[in-house]
Image (cartoon, rainbow over all chains, first blue to last red; front, side):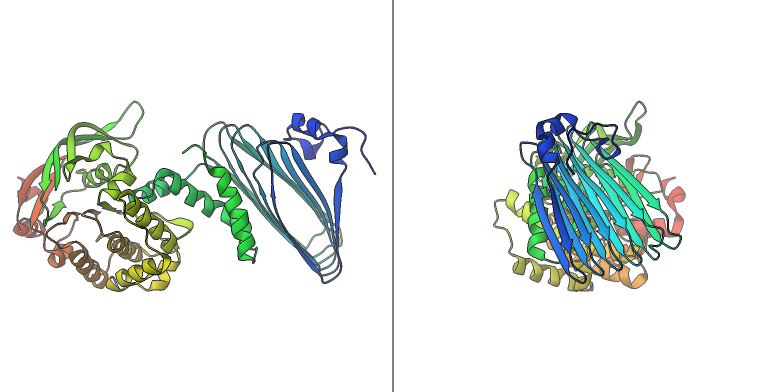
Length: 251
Length: 251
């Protein structure tokens, strides 16, 4: 199936998108879905650093067989509109793990859009998203969880936290839960706040300059998104990419 | 070493800053441990916070000279690098950052600003181990996140381990004895002696109780009331306060 026209902001999944960036991407780019089929019992881990000076979009359709696992860990540090979209269908006992960080200033919009379909019983999913922005930068997380009528014992969680380093930056979280089964656990949380000034002063009182104190606090903040990534080298790479984007941010 | 002259300071911004320090004058020589006692609300913590450079406190008149330098012209991290250590009454929890990482970064930041070479990971761990042992603190605690899950007493002990590692020229200790049981108080007091009792170092020790002074044995004791030093004497002044109370001694 291909789309002939660009989406509009009236489409729920594009509500906070940068439509100018979408137009520059064009219909063809939007049409390019990557399909990932994980057979029963198998597992797949994807680590990605996305974002550049031009708009980017990544769209995944992930199909998890029985007991299969998929994990995505993404640093989204675009300096222009950058969107990562993941649709996942989980069979019985499958697990989907997602850790995402949007980070950046300027005026760009970075976003994660996920649709997690618990189609069968006993599947689990966990999504941890952190957004750190300054100037008039924006980070979005649109997370939809669908639990089919017979998908009992589903355990789905999503957790979003935004950290805005200055007024003018924004973070948007849109959790959407559609649950048709009656014996499930679905947790979601979203908070947005500023840097902990008490912690920053404490660090400065021990000799850390403001930029280092901020980097450590941001590192701690976004670290949650990558804790379940066991490969330490990959984890460091993703963190470094995010913290690299922090250089030049407002203190 | 530290000369405070006619210091006036307010707390709280906006249209209605509250004057707390109202002409405080005090000087502390190298080699001296100077205890400050005083009733609640006298301005003891404000004095500590002003010396540390905490945001939200404004100096409206007077001066503070530290080792011949205008202390108030320095940012908090520059004060630390100049050799000033502020022991917090309520040490701050920093989730996601380990003590080891925090203190190593802090120490190396201070060393860098003094044109000293940074300590390697191994050198730092050895130093941290020594200082933790001095305060009878389990090294495992230092691997944990800064102050997270520490009891009140553990936090204060951790403050003293930090002081030992950073090895400041001058320490302002704000009610380091509060929240300590008798054994911990003895350990912390002995720690202060061992780290700071030296002809080239000084301590301003804010406390409510004689118990800590029994261990640390100050050279001088001053009473701070309503934003000013109203009386200075030797250790016997603290004993009189303990026996007779502020109202009688200050009358």
